[in-house]
Image (tube, rainbow, N blue to C red):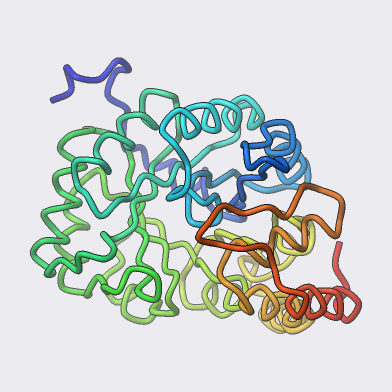
Length: 306
C-alpha cells in the first residue's frame, strides 16, 4: 500500500519518544464571529505555546472540534499548524468511528509532514476488542512506517482498550505510544514495553501520571498557560514529586474549572478572557454559560499561573 503515498515511508524511529516527551499542547480551533476558522488566531496560539517551551502540538482533536470541521478546513488548519510549528513536532488527531475515514486522515497527516498521528478508539459503534485491534492494524498497514499514538478515552468513546488488546498492538511497529485520557494509567503501565511512549491526557492528573510512568502530558490548559504546565511537567519528569504535587494543587482550580462544560467550551472562554482568541464554538456546542465563565474568573484569581 505504500505506493499510494506521496511521501516515502517514514521510520518509526525510537526518537519519537524523545521528540514528544514533555509538554504537548492540544490546540483549540478558534473561529471568527461567523464561525469560520480564524487562521491568524490559530497560528498565534501555536507560536505562543511553542515559544513558551512546549515540545510540540496536537491539532484537529476533540479540543480542536475536529468533528465539526469540513475536509478543506482540516487541510488548511494542518498546513497552518505545520508552518507555525517551524520544525517542532506536530501530531494530528486522525481517529474516526470509520476505519476507512481514519486511514484517509492518517494518510493526509503523513503526506503533509506530521510527526505522528493520534488515533482515538472508534466511538459510538462500540467495537469488540478484536474489532479495535483490527482497526488499528488496518491503519498501520495502510500507512506503513508512520508512528501511531493510540488515544484511549472511554468517557468520550464508550469503549476501553483492554490490556490484553494493547499487548497485541504493541507488536505492531507503527504503534509507537498511547495517550491515556481516562485515568487508566495503571492498566497501561502493566503492558508498556521499552521504547514505547505513554502520555497523560488529563491536566489534573499530570503529576501523578508522570510518577506512574508517563513521559509527557497532552494539555488543554497549556494553550492558555504554557509556562505553568511546562514547569509542572519538568518537575514531575525530574522526579521532584513534592514540588510537582504542590504546583498541581495550585493549578487545581483551573483544571477543575475546565471540566464544568464539555471541552473545548471552557478553554475557549478562558482564552477569550485572556484576549487570545474568540470563544465561539460550532453547534451542537454552545459558548460557555455565565456560570462557567464566573467559575473560570474565580479560578484565575485563585491560581498563580504564568
